[in-house]
Amino acid sequence: MGTNDQKSKKEEEHPMISKPSRLVILQKGYHLLGSLVFITGFSIGLVLCLQLKSLHMSTSKTQQQPLWSTLLFNHTTTVETKQELQLQVLQHNMSDQELFTRVSSLSSSSSSWFGWRHNNDEKMVVKVAFMFLTGRGLPLASLWDKFFEGHAGFYSIYVHTNPSFQDHYPETSVFYSRRIPSQAVYWGTSSMVDAERRLLANALLDESNQRFVLLSDSCIPLYNFTTIYDYLTGTNLSFIGSFDDPRKSGRGRYNPQMHPQINITHWRKGSQWFETTRELALHIISDTAVYWGTSSMVDAERRLLANALLDESNQRFVLLSDSCIPLYNFTTIYDYLTGTNLSFIGSFDDPRKSGRGRYNPQMHPQINITHWRKGSQWFETTRELALHIISDTVYYKIFDQHCKPPCYMDEHYIPTLVHMLHGEMSSNRTLTWVDWSKAGPHPGRFIWPDITDEFLNRIRFTDECAYYGHDGENITTSKCFLFARKFTKETLEPLLRISPAVLGFGP
Image 1 (cartoon, one colour):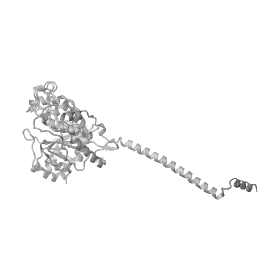
Image 2 (cartoon, one colour; image 1 turned 90 degrees about the vertical axis):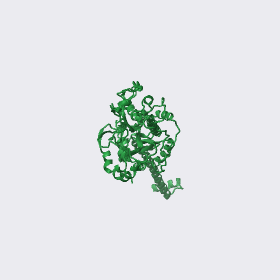
Image 3 (tube, helix red, strand yellow; image 1 turned 90 degrees about the horizontal axis):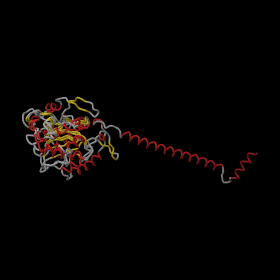
Image 4 (cartoon, one colour; image 1 turned 120 degrees about the horizontal axis):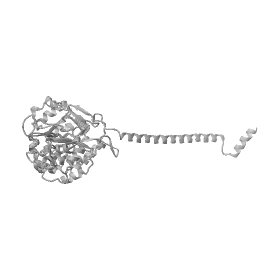
């Protein structure tokens, strides 16, 4: 009875609360507690998710860029944006001196490009700058279009041609609107070197260009893009032919008036066509304070380099002529070039008249006969070396003053410069094959009947050579040449026909 009295008393104290209403309040309390638990758990989960995502992004920034064969890179919208910017860069109205001055102020550092680089969450990759030095267009353009097909974002293209020549590449061509501000070039004069430096400087403006390849209009690639890319990017050295030639065509071309800046011991001969790293390219084009004289082959090369350097994403620079062809598909060449820290600039000591015989004692003491080198004009270089090439403020002037025919500046300037100052940055060989089996001042040319599977494979796998990867490992490879020249216009049809089976690209 006491218990019932207590219940009645409580009900009297809270007359508005009945038993059913207490049950409802209890149920609402459980719902409120559950909601608080859910919200708290969800908040903790969200914070953890964001932390894990941030950790993943931070970790991904340190991942090393793989070679082309394993590279997954979604860059469709990025490529479209960059192409618009590159077109604006190529349409500049800077003089050579203004161009070289701007490029010489750029950093030669390329370490951040050999891996993932994030700029506003954008993934960047190393690019190879293909620089075509030509007189009147590219007769093998269709072959090169097939070579580059499907690899946008991994290469840059720069064309130096006669200013009076009007090209008409379709908008679908990789050569469309890729012409840099050019000047007339005359074989055997300083205009050849000027053109090379011009190409390098333009390519160096793109910081992602780390390898630079100089090609002619008769060059062809000997491998697909992947093979050539791996080859070039797998080493820290450039490929510039440079040798001491004691013959009349070597040391016999030396002019004693180059002394004391360049003496006979400095004098070298080499192929005009080089492949170089970015660092060496910067050294080559750095001659801005004393740059003077008429347009020349070297000026055209420097002009190409300078224009390519305007695009900071350009990290490799390839000089090509209108007779050059790729010997592999784009992926192979891209991996080759970006797989190394070295440039590819042919440079050797030719004791013959066509080597040391071209040395002028007036170059002494800055350049002596032991420094003199000869090499291919067609090079592939890193961004760092390209900056060195266009930043040369001493040796370009010496060559321009004292290297006159039979001394040909485009065969000696870059090979000698790299040998003297930046030899450790070059593989000391060119990646552009030419046929010197016949006597004469120019390499052999190839016509329709020459184009066979056996002929191209003989070029592609003729020798063995050393290839230095980023880790410094010395690898012996049979891929010694990525490009070949001189191929005439009539070789285009047979090249397109056999390129899918032999070169790894095409229809």
